[in-house]
Image 1: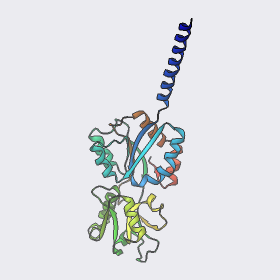
Image 2: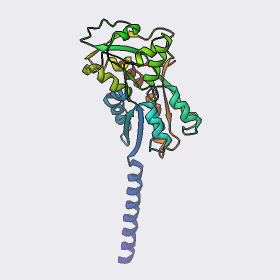
Image 3: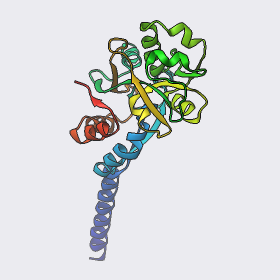
Image 4: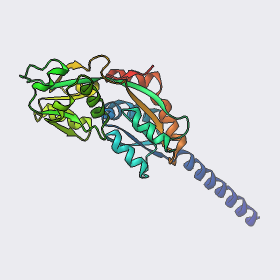
Length: 258
């Protein structure tokens, strides 16, 4: 009889242990890495990721922010990135053409604007894009790898002052660096996204890129094919597409792409 009881108890505890292991597995935290253009850092870190975490406590989001060109290169070299959000279609398209993005996962999510900024103490009389030549020191993103620099070059080329500007320009590695140079007074004027301009009280926007001078600034979002957690990645992407997330993007100056 004692043997029977012992066998029953052993079976009970074994079942309890297996159920416990199963439950732990189900609630185990997933981790995904989100690589995004530097201009997205504030809205993501301050609002959107905490909001997502409230809905999906079992998914941890690791972030890395830099120029879209640098992030593209990292993905091409096999960096463990699950989701990519760039500040231009160029980088996303290049990755997609190489088969590095999950098929049909790309969403052209947001739109931004290109603006000319000066410090709040500006005394150069700069009030239009053509006035940028009045600046002794100019800050723009490096057109070879930084989308905001590519947009700046396109704008300045179309208004026929690119050669004069590049002769006195410092090239930033990402849009945040360009913004900080102007804010700190290292540059008299710079070209950034409108969302960056409103994030720093030490600078002011004096002009938007002239109509027809620059391509539409689109922020695409896509899942990297090498992801090891596509299910969790899809949940984050779907969250960023919601009306709730869009309200946050709009509060930071972005517009939903239509």
